[in-house]
Image 1 (tube, one colour):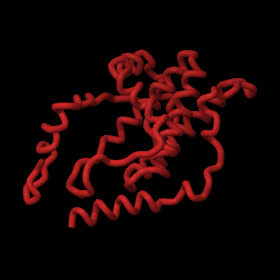
Image 2 (spheres, one colour; image 1 turned 135 degrees about the vertical axis):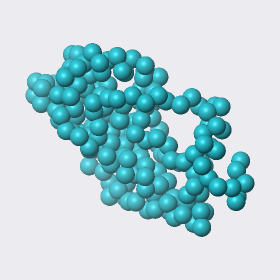
Image 3 (tube, one colour; image 1 turned 180 degrees about the vertical axis):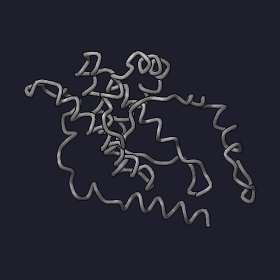
Image 4 (cartoon, one colour; image 1 turned 30 degrees about the horizontal axis):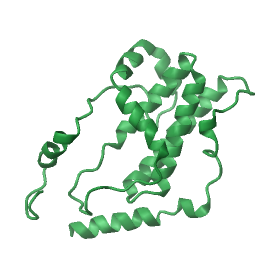
Length: 193
């Protein structure tokens, strides 16, 4: 616990978090949510992508498991000085899905893409802040672009895996409301003033 008047520094919280949670190493992967041509990027050097992803198996499994969650809530109290999770780690699965497709495991790639879109929809509509809601929107965009690229290379009659059931239905208008995210954002800003 930091005293209320202590200056906030990332190091002050990192030491507490690292006791329980190991830091995820930085890696360079070719696919990003706001970038096109993910498949082409992976095909440039699939061996390097595979080698990089080999050390990410645990993280990729945790990202996949997020699709079973129904909401995102920050475990921290409402305070603008507290750290934001590194949501960019969620982008790592995009390269994994692209690699799976380029290696002939298209159904695995499709299932992973749909799983990520399901997670993104939860971030957009059932989170307590604008950052996760915006991350969800970017995550959907990147995964839908990859989905379109994968489907373009498969026969028209290729079925989507069961994981995709219900993922690409038109959302109900109330699920697009930013009210819960704005309420969480207001609580955070109010808590820091």
